Structure formats: structure tokens, C-alpha cells
Length: 99
Image (cartoon, rainbow, N blue to C red; front, side, top):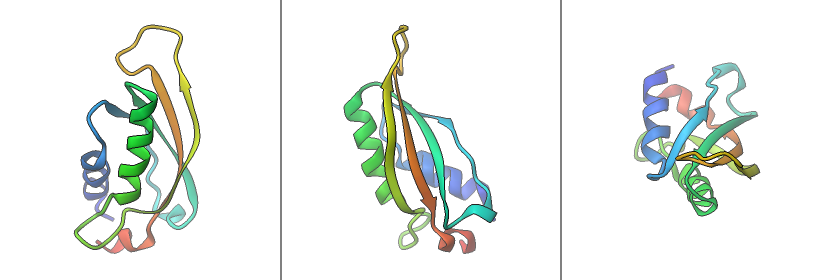
């Protein structure tokens, strides 16, 4: 599995104002839900991330994820460049394994 391809596909799909906090890639769990945590500059950016993840592709035809949904979005009380933490339920596409 070309992990760098998957990571670059994910990173390139993120809008500005969003950074990956927690990422897990395990080929054994492709096709089953897992969590992705992203820090953002605003609540709207968290929505933008969800939309971007839904459209993320490994190449021009292969989707990175088959499912993306919100689990939660929270705002930090302490000052931060990325005060919102968004947790997404994602399902990696099994087709991404063959790319």
C-alpha cells in the first residue's frame, strides 16, 4: 500500500485553515469506519473539510473515502491558531489499496 500516496491525497484535499491532528491508516480496516481528527480555524472550515474529504481522490477516478460524516466539532477555550477540533467518521475506499 502506497501510504505516501494516501497521505498526500488526504493532505492535498484539505482547504487552507485546516491541519490534521490524528490520522490512522490500516489496510486491514479499509471498508470499515475509522476516525480522523482535524483542527480548523473556524466552524465553517470544519464543514469545508468534510466537503473536501467527500471529494478526495487517490487519482482522477478512485475516491479516497467511501463515507465521510461528522462525529463532533468542538471549540477550544484556550487561544490557538486552530481552535476548532473536528472529528470525522471516515471509511477508506478499498479501491485505494490497489492504487
